[in-house]
Image 1 (cartoon, one colour):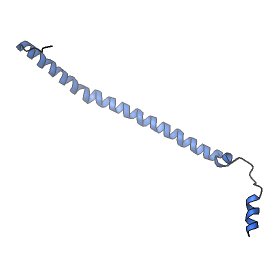
Image 2 (tube, one colour):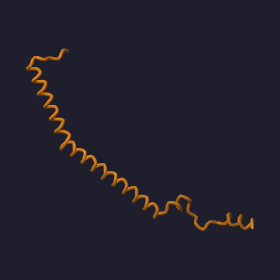
Image 3 (cartoon, helix red, strand yellow):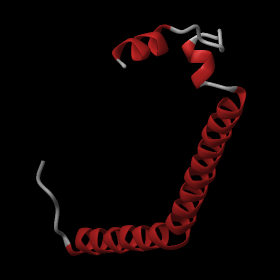
Image 4 (cartoon, helix red, strand yellow):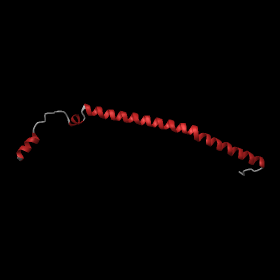
Length: 89
């Protein structure tokens, strides 16, 4: 029984390809390539849409609010200057 296991382990392999060729067959490489390419394209689409949406939100909502606050501050500073208040440097 022990001798048959040794003979089984020592028998000649039918497949003479190296181990990496047996593991990475063309089918597996095609699947891995497809997954990697789809992942990269998916990330690009996601990041592009994220940037476009953030830019749209900024220009549509945030920028007008900041501009309004800036104009209000300028008006208050002009009124304070007319009233005679000044900042000491």
